[in-house]
Amino acid sequence: MGRIFGIAGTLLALWASAELYLKGVDGAFGGVLVSGEDEAADRRTLPRRAGDAAERAMRQNEERRQQLLGD
Image 1 (cartoon, helix red, strand yellow):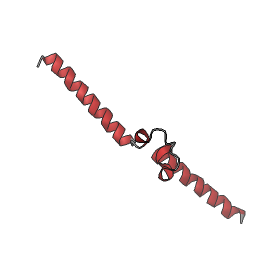
Image 2 (cartoon, helix red, strand yellow):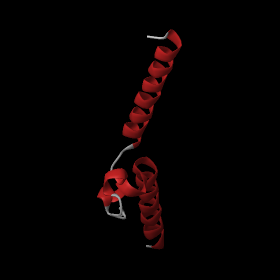
Image 3 (tube, rainbow, N blue to C red):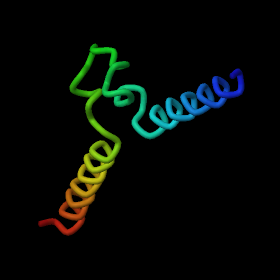
Image 4 (cartoon, helix red, strand yellow):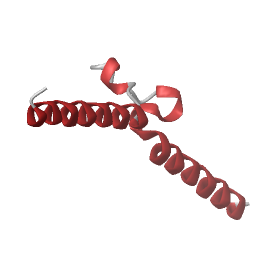
């Protein structure tokens, strides 16, 4: 009986760890752990933040290019 509880506890711990690792603290378990202080920033996902950073870098690159070419 103890072995069953040990296996169930291990599986539960693995699931919780995977949930936290893959979705982050704010997205894990359906958002139950969200602090609620800044929900707009909390809901921004990693791909969205990466996309925003890429767009910002492309915009800066285009501005530098325009300055160098004198257009």
